[in-house]
Amino acid sequence: MYSDDDRQRQNGESDKSDPWRPPFVRDFGRIIHSASFRRLQGKTQVFPGHESDFFRNRLTHSLEVAQIAEGIADRLNEVYAKDLSNEKIDSRLCAAAGLVHDIGHPPFGHNGERALDVKMREYGGFEGNAQTLRILSRLEKKARYDEPVDGDRRAGLNLCFRTLAAILKYDTEIPIERSEAKKPQKGYYSSEATIVADIKYKVLAGKPLPDGTKFKTVECAIMDIADDIAYSVYDLEDSLKAGFLTPASILATDDELLKRVAEVVTEQLKDEIGETVSMSKVQATFVAIFSDIFTSEEPKTPDAGEERQQDDIINFIKAMRASRDLNMDAGKRVELSSELVHEFINDVELTINEEFPALSRVNLVKETRIKVEILKQYTYLSTIYSNRVKLGEYRGTELVQDIFKALEKDNGHLLMPDDVRKQVQDAGEDKALKARHICDFVAGMTDRYAIEFWARLRSDSAESIFKPI
Image (cartoon, rainbow, N blue to C red; front, side, top):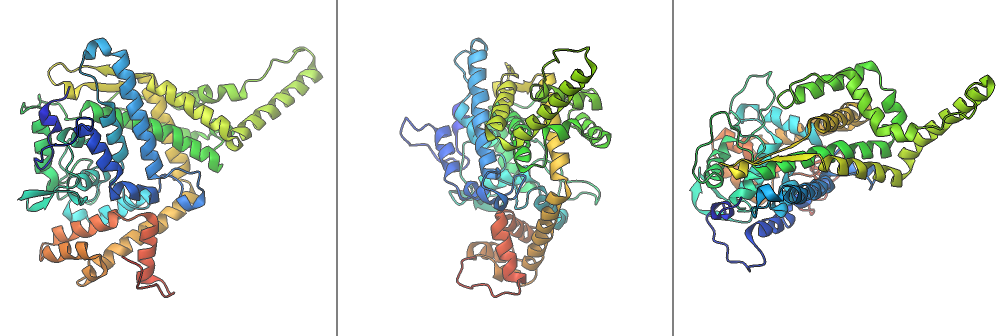
């Protein structure tokens, strides 16, 4: 499952650590101690951090993804022990991939991403997965190359090739130019194309990929599933806590939203399951999840009209209280989340690739895959698209674009920290490189830092010049 080439580091540095700290464990440590990982605590997941200490942010979400990914790997190693023989999946490597899978997200969630993409449209755009690879392989200030690679000596955290492979979800180089109407393609920037080529060469032992095969390692597939599980379950839990959703409101969802969820789920899963997900399928999914909450006792006298009516009223009141309790009772929410995560982990399957073990396939069984996607898309469409959340996001979009506009002006580099200022200056007349350096700086901001930085540019009140930039 793993070779010496997998464990080789990006810039060729030889591992001379203690035997109890193998290379993938060292990578896990480098990630934990990196500035980019710490900054995830200040980036929004669904609800802004200032609203409540309860809600998840990008850091706590990433920790949950890492734990679920490690759990999936441990279970697969147990269930498929005979197929794997002694070549077990490295669960710590899967956890490392979970920790960094969102490290490339800018402030203010997807709206921050869209705002940066608008500003970078002429220069390859902005895409969160591509930015994750760029941070790990370029921007983190841990190591350098002896000689420049594509004109850049930075080697980021200098992780092992197999660790970098574990976050390559999309095997596509993002084109520099695209039409106005197109969304940013998911993949990696051309500035990291040489690094990606090195990753593939090392992980595949120099063998070419078969025609039509995409490069996605078993650890990356595990991380991807863990992300979907965490997203679908814990964003729902946060939405229940916030009161944006209740079991009763979910089961009473109008046809318009049910139709949108069904259409999006069908589109997302068209390459995996190749079938249409209906509105009734969406409804049935939530009925199954919340059925225990609304189960009521049969009336003792079904034929007694008035008494039966009284029983129906009592059962209805009980059901409404049960729905309310799931919002108010943390214990019940945690129990529901725990049951769902356990169910989903147990429905992960492994198919060994004999020729390329690193590319062994990991997937959820079909019915569970549909269930996870329904939960994920329903929460996204009903909560993240709500007017209350959108008002906050709109502010973030305008703010990110405003900061970028100020920094891209002729003397905009003077507003930036010294190390970034030098990079922008060294870019000279290369507009694309200059814009990418500015984009890297803005994308690395936390929500709070972005607000404070913008306040220095636009606020009516005086901002201290003694606070570091």
